[in-house]
Length: 61
Image 1: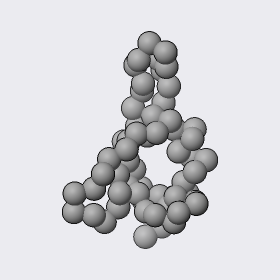
Image 2: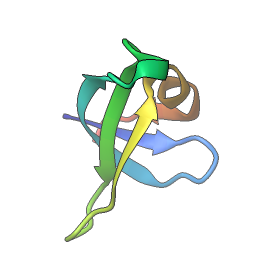
Image 3: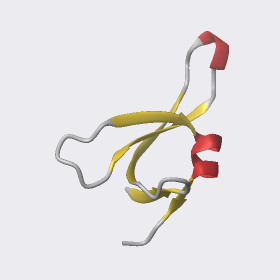
C-alpha cells in the first residue's frame, strides 16, 4: 500500500486497491479505492484513477 498526499489540501491518504467500474455508463473505467491515512476509523473513497493521479502525489514515509 502506498501513501499519497492531496496536492491542494496536503491531507494524507492510503491507497488500498484498484478496481474496475462495472456500471453500464462507465464499464471498464479504472478506479482507485483509498482512505484517510492515520485515522482510527478512516473514511473510504473511490475516485477515477486518472483523476486520482492528477490530484495526488505519492510520498515516501
